[in-house]
Image (cartoon, rainbow, N blue to C red; front, side, top):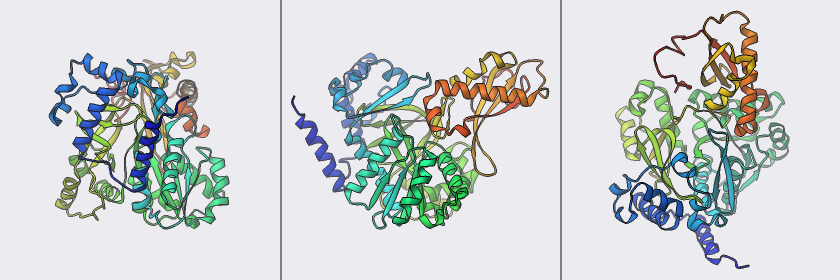
Length: 491
């Protein structure tokens, strides 16, 4: 057996650059072009993909050429070429870890990666821990509350935080996963020995942990808690509520949301600057609508364009990123856009707001979420196909049309709930047996999700899996107007 020394040297060099805080070389445009050339030369599937679209990689000489390369996505790339062919030199074994994500068909998508990919993402965690939480000084307990196992969140986060510890940050990690009882068991034992505690998890799950801990007498205010979120858009009101419940006085420096995906790990992260800017726009919804082009308030993060090169294509985000499967102009269907660093600060200044600049002048990307009729609940993507399975059950199919709208709503206590509004069949009385009908449909939908959606099964706590059902009359003008194309989400 021969040990791959070239691979070992590549990994060693990546660790040296990470430990010495050496940024990725070259400009963002140069990095994107170089990754394209390398991918075209070494990845069999991408060579076939380019040939299928009539592209000779030798003709791609400048950025304008790059920006006309065909977009790739799961349907046009991942589902058409075998997994090894999507890796460099067709060698899946050169990747040392695989993660999976649930797809809209219920079939998992496999994402191979190597330790060098972890180091790229660890730089984003480093920015959060250093600039936001001041973790270069106080001793820190990092509690990973993302699901463990084959899903990307838990193991990837654990690895990245441990890389920070290896770099010299006084961080100790414990990984109970999304096991609420285990989280609340280890915290009182470990937290008193550290100067601050960082909880990392999906927003609604962390709130559930915080509320359950408070009910059990956990002294959150004594632990100097910081919070890292991922996976879902939340309001600034929600941020303030959870910060207050752990005794946090400064949510701008005590919280951070990550923009990530199983496809490429963390793409960007909130910073004190981006949070300040988002809170400014949250208080001015009309201005936010002008800037972001939508009445909704998006997640707003900063990103390093040398490792994650973003473009906007007809209102959706496209990125280029290295990994076990290199992604060139990859679209995951997220609605959003890109705003330059100086452009954002100038825009704020025009409206009388001058936030404190960040140490790194990184551009901004704003994200509304997945455009393909999905919602995210406790970090699980809820697809219409999976919900529809519940509507097709014999116990309910006779009195519903099969049309529905999925929403994640926030109640007065800032709890996130999965709500499904269903259209009743013609002639079905909305009032008669409404409670029994809603219960039967809720159970059918939950059972379908548990059967078809592994993320829902493992991410969403059992006590939150039963959706809230609202019944509307046939052709209800608000949710089911006749004569227009139906949308399964409110976005």
